[in-house]
Image 1 (tube, rainbow over the protein chains, first blue to last red):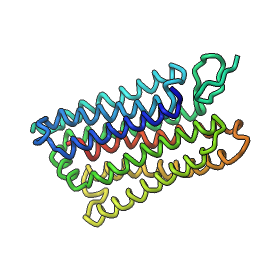
Image 2 (spheres, chains in turn orange, purple):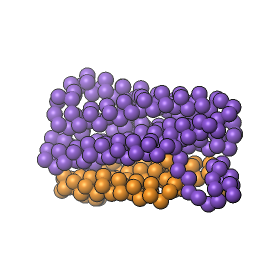
Image 3 (cartoon, rainbow over the protein chains, first blue to last red):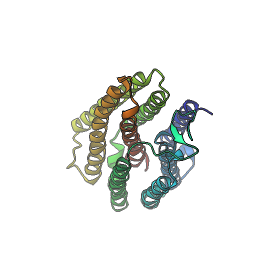
Length: 94
Length: 196
């Protein structure tokens, strides 16, 4: 597959994921039937996945030396893990 | 043996290619780590002031942030397509960049309208912890975006030059910087607007 289709497909996937999180936010916890902690965890994990897509395919880490990918994945873990756990801890129980 | 793959990058054999300069990547990792710490400090404050943060967050209109997310994602796509056109010596690099600049300007205008709306409603950085974090995170991000717009203009000057080979690394560095502005917003948006 050429580079331009990959870039466009990644952009489409990013838009779909963004719309999904937005839809869940608009739906609210009552209509979605999920607790706030589950919705928060989903929204943040999707955001971290989107960040990884940008790193790999827009910033071209996918074809960069492995050491850069490892450094970026380490960064993502350092930022993402405490963020998800702290947000779940603060989520209301409804 | 040097080969030119279909991505237009001249690389020896199957060697992996590092776009942009090493120093730029060091800056990106350090800067995003700083933002990561600030975002986690906000999440920590949220644990201690959960009710206050929920009430303050309800005063925000998330549709501003949602529209800005779509704009930045699209601008990043345009910048990636511009780099691809530049590498393949195809036309369109400047046009893609101009589209990215338009998206970036629209982001700044929307952010300005949102700040005005919040200031009129009486929400300032001194209102409470939530709004202090909100203005700090979005303000620092907006500053990065405004610098990024200048970088995009600089890249357009490079793309207009018929002999761009010498400046390709500088162009790549600008592209990586702009994608960093995009990915920072991808974290800031859900943390400030979406999580409950």
